[in-house]
Structures are given as C-alpha cells and as structure tokens.
Amino acid sequence: MVGQILRARLDPAQRYGLRLTLFVLAILLVAIPFGLLLREVTSEGRLTEIDTIAANELHEEVRDSPGLVTALKAISFLGSPVWFYVLIPAASYYMWKRGHLRLALFLVVTTLLGGVIDTIVKEIVARPRPSLVDPVATAHGKSFPSGHSMTAAVAYGALLLVFLPEIPRRWRLPVLAAAALLVLAIGGTRLALGVHYITDVAGGFVLGLAWLFASTAAFSIWKVERGKGRVDVTEGLAPEEF
Image 1 (cartoon, rainbow, N blue to C red):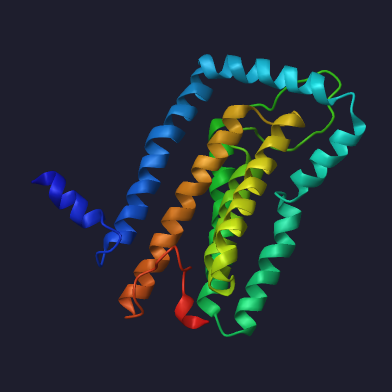
Image 2 (tube, rainbow, N blue to C red):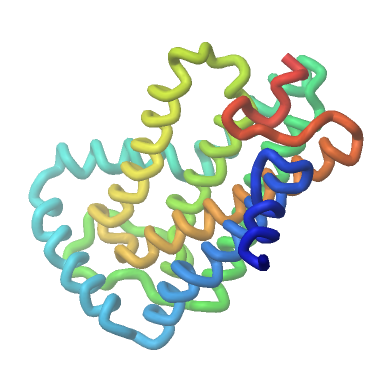
C-alpha cells in the first residue's frame, strides 16, 4: 500500500508528481552519493588514496605536453566563472528581450545560487587542492567540490531547459549528448590539469544535478500555482511561451 501511494505521488504525470520527483531526486543525490563522497573526503578514506594516485599519474602524463595542456585549459575555460559571467547574462538578456522574464530569472538565479552553494561547501569542507611537483596549472580556493564541474552541470543544464523549445526535435538528442559530453570534458580537464581530485569532480557533478533538479521543481511549482501547467522536462521549462 505504501509503495503504491509513493509511486502515485512521485509519478511525473500526476499534478504534483514532477516537483516531488525532482525534489526527492535532489535529496537522494545529496544524501547518498554526495554524502558518501563527503564522508570519504573529510575522513580521508580509501577514495582519497585513489585520488592522490590518480592525480600524480595524470600529472606525469600531461606535464611534458604543452599542446595538450593548452587544449585542456581551453576546454576548462568553458566551465570557468569568467565564461559564465558572459554566457548567462547574454542568454538571460535574450530571454528578457523576448518577453520571457521568468526564464531569464531562472537562468540568473539558478546559476548564481549554484555558485554560492559551491563556495559555502568548499569553505566548510576546506579540502586543500592537489600538491604536485612542477604543476601545469593553478587555481584559487578550496578543492571540494569542483566549482567548474558543478557550475557546468547547473549552467548548461539550465540553458538546455530554457532553450529546448527552440531546438528542432530531431536535434534535441544530439544537442543533449553534446552538452553532457562538454560537462564531462570540463570535469576531466580539472583532473588532468592537476587542480582537482576525482572525488572533487564527482562531488561537483552530483551537487550540481541536485541543485538543478531542485531549481526546476521550484519553477514547476510557480507554473502550476499560476495555472500554466506543470513543467515537462522533455519539452523545456516553458514551451508555451515560444
């Protein structure tokens, strides 16, 4: 009986199903995978030993290849705060000019608050960055979670949700795959450049997805309360506005 009730409440097709589903997913992501990663990092568990070994081995592979380092830095830039300070305001301005103020606010608020959450967690955990001999790159701040990884997951995910109605259906899957590969590549560059550990990048992805789910659920609540229908993530946040 309880299982049937839960399945009905979490069914995305039901009136409140999508928000509950997204909130539950967000909570589970934070409570389980992120919680496990956090415990490993703070207690210097087995995963941190793997972190150190992987960081040193990757550094050995990369440091004598200037061309590769340049390419890694170029990809990494696509997940940097400087890049998103340009991309998100530009996308938000485009939405605002077309009369989609709520979508513009979703982009700005989701990305900005995601950055704030990342900074708060970094300061609480206070994990030092990898210490390598002859590093090929440096970064400021603490190590866990990876800000590039988290912000990339949040920002590119939010952009997809907002602009999905403008993408022809036949191109949606390729665009989604390309965005996912870009986010993964950004996280990979942070490892290869020696400025983060594997658990940092994984923690950034998990926390970023959790925040994106929660933000989408909040937007869906706003839509339903104003009689605009629930969000269908396969069609974007507000396809009716396009």
